[in-house]
Amino acid sequence: MSQIITPVILVFAVGLIASVGLAFASKVFHVQEDEKFIAMRAELPGANCGGCGYAGCDDYAHALVEDPDGVPCTKCAVGGPACAEKLAAILGKSADGMEKQVAYVMCNGTTNNAKKLYEYADIPTCKAAKQLFGGSKACPNGCLGLGDCEAACEFDAIHVIKGVAVVNRDKCTSCSACVKACPNHLIKIVPDNKAKVIVRCHNTQKGADARKGCNVACIGCGMCQRTCKFDAIHVENNLASIDHDKCKKCGMCVVKCPTGAIQDILHSPEQLEKIKTSLAAMEAKEAEKKKKAALEAAEAKKAAAAKA
Image 1 (tube, rainbow, N blue to C red):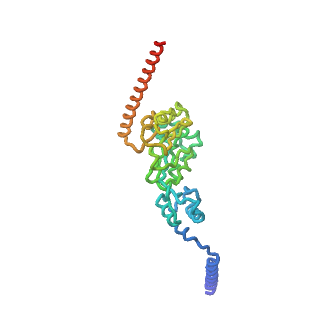
Image 2 (cartoon, rainbow, N blue to C red):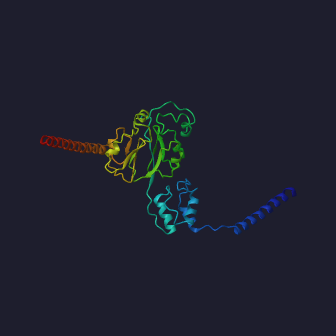
Image 3 (cartoon, rainbow, N blue to C red):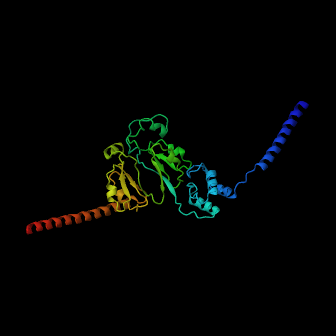
């Protein structure tokens, strides 16, 4: 009997001594947490996505406490403006300047639009597919469609549909996980309220080559740039890009794009058709004016020559 009781008593005694020692150590070496840190950590979503530029929510909260004037309280994209306001209230300052951001995919190379070079049947990731001749699609810059971005997203905000990634803007928290996961660097974070007209192409090949790979590729023709009255769209390196701060979302570049590379999520197809009709009438009027001016110049030149 003693062979059983003695070890039990010894284990109990060791445990008791260890627990007393640990309790004493916890009191002696206790580090007092800042109350502001505790309050802010409770408000942060706990996604630990790193989108704020810090290692996680704890790191961001510590940074806010240590440098409340230097570190913006608007860096948590997952929490959004509501979280920023709560963090600012804890720090006793304003949370002005934060607007909702969303990811958008610069590609519309669906199975119907993008041409395939071969059938890929290996490791089902975009990163792996890119190692084999740049991927199975003819466009070297397009969406590979194997869902690395989808796997990286913790918010169910991006899915591969018909061979191309599509973002659910309502669910997107702009955490940038998909941006980091895409091997072709196709995904950008943009202001949700401004980016209603976007170029869904990332191909920098010359027009003829780009069109061979995808029916809706930007061919760098510059039609959009010439049409825009607000200097909001420019073609650089064979690819159109929009300055969302200048863009008035008028839809004129959308209806003039010959390949449909520019997408408008603000106007309905019926509204775009009206914009197209209105733009055609305006261009016809301008053409008539130029024709009239040319005829008048020719008549004036003829008259001057007759006098001479």
